Image 1 (tube, rainbow, N blue to C red):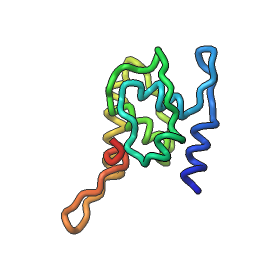
Image 2: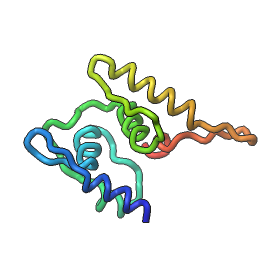
Image 3: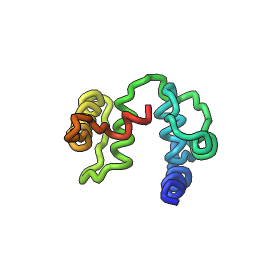
Image 4: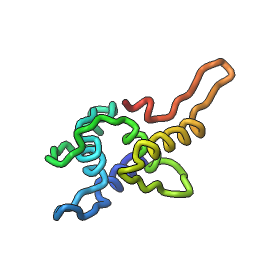
Length: 122
């Protein structure tokens, strides 16, 4: 139930840009993730919840720090929303990953390590 609420929010919350209207799911999966692999989720979600449209202006770089930054912004309880700038993007993405790892990596008594969700998705 909560998965469908979450996916509906990303599919129906939209922004107007470049003379078109894009859902959050389209912005993330079709533009920002342009050249990157799709998340490894089950078949049903892959084909029905994640849009599969190609845009000529989609990012052509494969920088997984960007995906981590998107994920952290969408799922964390951050007190501030990061605004990325082109001139500081590398430093900003490195910083958000450091903060996320410091907060989410867990070391268990049996000497195992629990990694954040983005490590499991890609």
